[in-house]
Image (tube, rainbow, N blue to C red; front, side, top):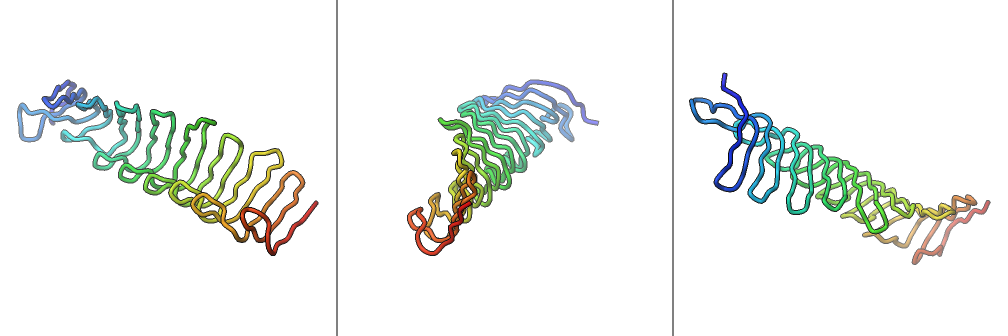
Length: 212
């Protein structure tokens, strides 16, 4: 059995490790980081987690950036955020979901702080941006449910406005903008609706309007 103990090491490159150690295989007086520990880098970034054979493991650990106060707790692969994890940004934003090589990719929940209040998104990410299908809720009560591309509405989607009449539009978007063509207006308050062609966001062309 290799001896295990606690200790602190200050490195010449400015890093500092404090935590568990073990005797390196085949030696009698050379120790390596092994077990739980805290590694402070020269730039004051800090990692708290598990070490094995003198290296960080892919198990759950917490990394804090000194420069912007971002803090990630989750899974790793080769010292990159990979798997499930939570990032609390210094700006107050929070992402909870899947990561691939340091980028938000897969299903996740993102709360973004804005001047008007928090914007809450749940859905798919790829390459660190909203890509795929997801739902975003805005501080003014608006809600978008549909397809995204590079953080913008893109494809089929439904935008429900937060006003008192609960008006919603369902149709096609391109890079965040409604496009001409087929769509549906629904007025929740009186249950009226229009389904048909739109031009410049107005009813124009063939369509059906129903009043209640």
